Length: 102
Image 1 (cartoon, helix red, strand yellow):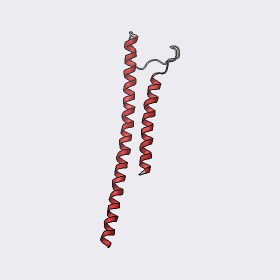
Image 2: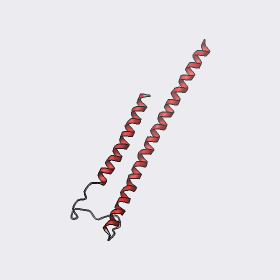
Image 3: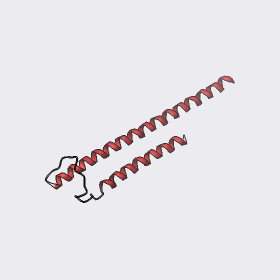
């Protein structure tokens, strides 16, 4: 019981940390133009439109990371529930056996 709570807490902290790290990395200042690698995405002549395109790409990547973290969290929750249910079933079976033995 305590182990699953610890696992869930750890997963929640990792998800929160990833979200904070993603927002911090999105706010970092870009290196000077001479050091920037060639852009892998399409460029636009209007800097505002270009920035919007970059933000959309960053948001898309962040949503993918969040979805992956949420998937892992749900998997852990499902496993914890199944372990808890199994333990409860075993406990009920032992109680029933002790009642039948009397």
